[in-house]
Length: 129
Image (cartoon, rainbow, N blue to C red; front, side, top):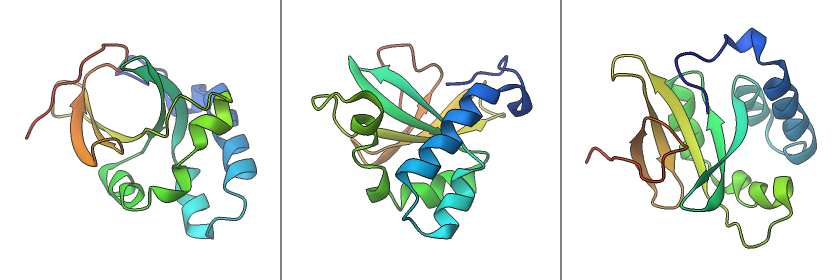
């Protein structure tokens, strides 16, 4: 996942190409509104608790909240990307909080709640109730 020192979105050509490929292949039969807002996002894989997690970096809170209400199309995407049937179907829909010391606010499909994450490479995430 990005951090405040990540290059601007225009310099993330590889991540954007991966995102576009996934949208074209995996979401080709989804509603057009979903494909349109997904093109504003960046997709990546991360590891939390020893398992792969599909991360959707959203451009703002509104997009993250809208996607968090429509998680069904994302179930199984980790399988699609990794061919690891044991990895689960956990997804994070995140947006960057500029006023919160550089943390990400993420909707976690494993707990169905919002969590603050400062870095996905850390094994534990702090939550704010």
